[in-house]
Amino acid sequence: MEEKEYCQLFSDAFQLNGLSGLLTAERVNQAVRFIDYLTEENQKYNLTAICDPISIVYKHFVDSLLASNLFSGNASVIDIGCGGGFPTVPLAIFRPDLHITAIDSTEKKIRFIDAASRIAGFSVTAISGRAEVLATSDMREKADIGTSRAVASLPILVELCLPFARLGGSLIAMKGPDLSRELKEAKNAIKILGGNIEDIQSASLRLPHGATEQRNLLVVRKISSTPLQYPRAFGQIKKKHL
Ligand code: SAH
Image 1: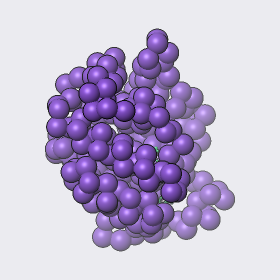
Image 2: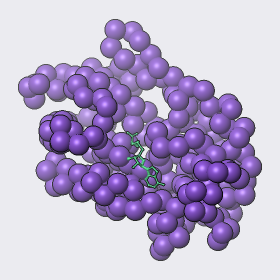
Image 3: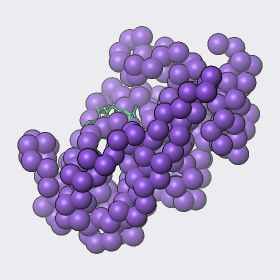
């Protein structure tokens, strides 16, 4: 796709989803360079199942940015399980005030994010490792915001993510349309880990030709420190959530 077509695509997609305020020519240029590199590397190893430019812009970029107004200015953010770069890269490009650390257990994906940030010219710190291990390091309880998309069901996710949030900070989980069962199952874990459900916002991802998909954006506030025995080893987390 030509740069000019991309500009139109970003303009249409952002306008449709109330995100026009985030658009600048330079940011779109960075996003295009990222998408080109993602598409190229995705042919060598699996980074994303979504491959065509229109779907990447809507289902990765716009989708990742639906929660962008929940991220306070200049916040330090940790994206847990960033994979091919979502929501890390859209946030890094379109919210350059944020200080983003991306973690993933697959080293290849972290090397990709690192290279992509140099090629496209955005700023992130990319660290390879498992969340439940890194959460016991000096990264524990440091971030203003922990965030994650498409990594685990909520009862597991909160144990992987909440330990990274500082006291008074939060977890912003990007979730699909049916949250009620997951939420019920995660209530106990949230409490034990020091969290409190602050807000659940429903959002619509507006696609071309009138289609929409529903999302739930969950905000959990960290109201007390996470007890040191959490997170547990992944085998234990998976076997029995809190
Ligand atoms: N957030 C991205 C990727 C989702 S796929 C997106 O929305 O497109 C899930 C990613 O989480 C994979 O890249 C996987 O390697 C990573 N992951 C799964 N469990 C993890 C853990 N315990 N610690 C760190 N990364 C993990």
